[in-house]
Image (cartoon, rainbow, N blue to C red; front, side, top):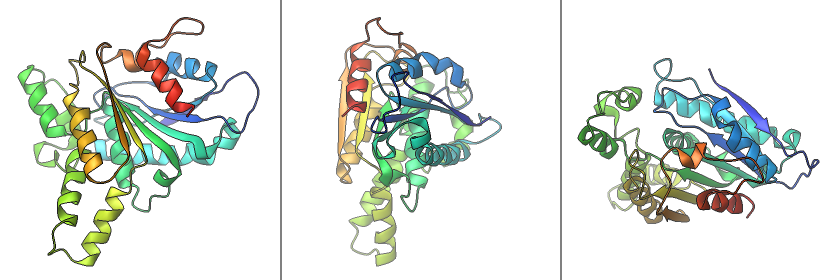
Length: 265
């Protein structure tokens, strides 16, 4: 079931405060908004309006359909930013794990860039951006057949078209090919400008989604001209990035402090 809940600071309405639209992970087949209440509450305590969205899970919906739901939810959040007490021009799309993949795909689905151009930035934490390489990694770990990722994508023949990494790589290669006509070049330019400034968070201690996913995507974004920054931490498990938030005044982990600083920039 798709939906959205917003957490707001109790410090009074300030129309200049930033808003984070958060998309959870869960192998495309699990996860509920309530699980991320600590994240939403702590960000709200730090003066950041936070909208936690949910999407229809696999097998009820495919990953592509989930991406379309994320795009609709983003549009809804931006439209209601003032109601939430936030500045729509300071909207950040934040994803974790499979949620980062859905965010990236949603931006690529935004053909007219109506929502992506309104974003301050996209923040992907421990995301999967190349389905094929992550499937290989899961296969080596012996969990590929247990994971719902491959099925949620529509099978292995859909891996490339459901990978933000490959979509942007292909658009980059096509745009540099002198044999392409103007219409194709225009389509490629639309793809490459679908991304706002992008920040990728990852950890070399993450054994669920290795940092290679973020490193390779970072390189591809740079190749196509997207302003991007990669933050690699030497600590932090996969789940801690989204589920490790503590209520104020408990101390935050470094990557949580960096996220909050980024959302206030």
